[in-house]
Image (cartoon, rainbow, N blue to C red; front, side, top):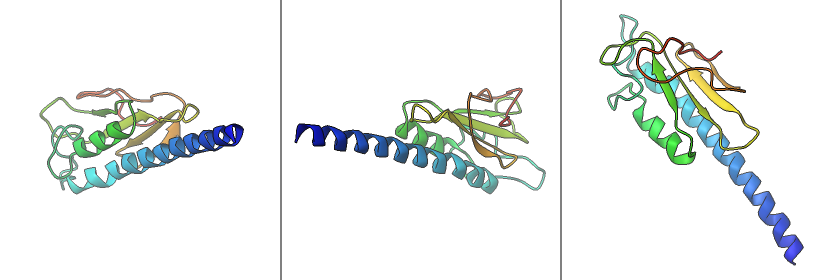
Length: 130
């Protein structure tokens, strides 16, 4: 019975981690849709898109991802703080040990990468998933 219980617990742990990966990917992918809500006709997103709580801001989704995983989301925009960016990107380490990082950006990319491919913060030089 003890051996059976340990096998079942190991399987449940693996399934739980895969479920967290899936939830992180879904929330991160939702960032593209959320940011699009604040995209203006002048080709910019809401000011401070990564930390904004306004429509089109990504803060609520960042908090949701941070609640799922102990790894903080690195989110950056290509303009200085307080201004409206024309591009943004976000990446986070997936909860599973073999998962790598999940990256999304304003060009429409959403993919797993082996390393963190962008830096967070305002004025980031690279906000695209490579």
